[in-house]
Structure formats: C-alpha cells, structure tokens
Image 1 (tube, rainbow, N blue to C red):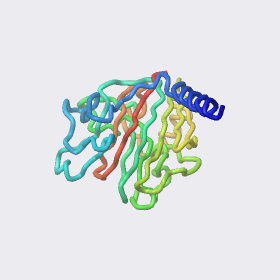
Image 2: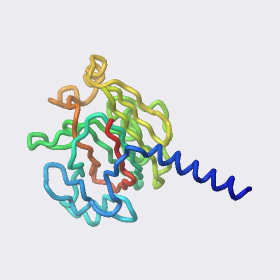
Image 3: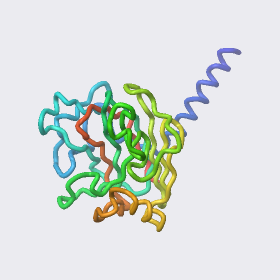
Length: 226
C-alpha cells in the first residue's frame, strides 16, 4: 500500500511539473548557442562559453573583443520568460528585453528594458536605487530583495502581457508596472532614458544577455508566448 501511495505522489508531482511547464519552449539547449548571436552581428562572441549546461561569460575566453551582448534570433511580443542566473563577486549584467536590433542603435540597452542582474554589495551600481538585483533597471525599485548570495543560482521570471509587466525573483513578485501608458511616460521621464530616442517604445523585440564586462552565468532559459 505504501508503495502504491508513494508512486501516486510521484506521478502527481510529475504531472504538476509538466502542467507548469506546458507551452514553454527552451531558448537555450544547454549545449550550444544555437538560436543566439551577438547584437548587430551574425556570429557569437567567443566569450560566451557553454559550460556545465550554462551560458558563461568567460572573461579569459573573451579576450579583448570576443564578447558583446548575446541576443535571441527571434523577436517576442507578449511572453512569459523564465531563466536562472548567478554572478561572480563584484559582477554586473542584466536580462534585456524588447530589444530592437538595427545598425542605428549602438547597443541592446539603447531600446530595451532590463531586469537587473548584479552583486548588490560588491558592484558600485548596487549602491544606486533602482539598480539592484531584480529592479526594472533605473525605472522601478523592487518591492523586496529575495536575491541569493553571490555565487548561488537565482530563478527569475519576466511576464509581459498587454502592457502589464511583472518581474519575479526566486518566487517573489518584486515589480509590477504598466508599460506604454501615461504613467509609464512619467516613469521614463524621471529616468536616465528620458531623452533617449525610441527607448522603451517597442512592443516586440529580442531578448538579450548583457556583457557588462563581468563574469556571469545563465541557464534554464525558456519562454512561453502569450
């Protein structure tokens, strides 16, 4: 009887996990950089190495010019994105979305929004409000800071549907805001992006992993289009 009960519990757990993942597609296969390329290029910078099932910005492999922001080949509109990240001590990076890839824009952050990835206590940017882990970078401060210690994996989610944006860090909703309405314009006007032409205006775009010059890892990246 105990064995039957245990088997039923395992089956229920597997079913629940399966339902939770339904509709999600991997953006990273854990083995290659297929589906990704460096921003405004056709290839992938040598600094982005696949190691132990994760995309690792390896500063030794990167050298002087082998990095750059890694972006998806495909664009997304409404979506639910899941990913894990960790940083080395004193490191800074970010997950940037609604990125418009065009030669006239110099970088992913010229158009895209960012969920901050950072060592809060070790990197100088962590001392700036709205620049800490989980923040909607320079726009909306996290309501709490459930970030794990440096070197440990964090689970992050970004949900954007019909202009409603939710950021989740380690199971905790840390940011909720509305994009592209009058209140959004006010938020942008109070940020560093106030005078940046076209910034934060695109409702579809690519997803980017930022090369901020520091060591960072990403894995378990998956997306569901909504």
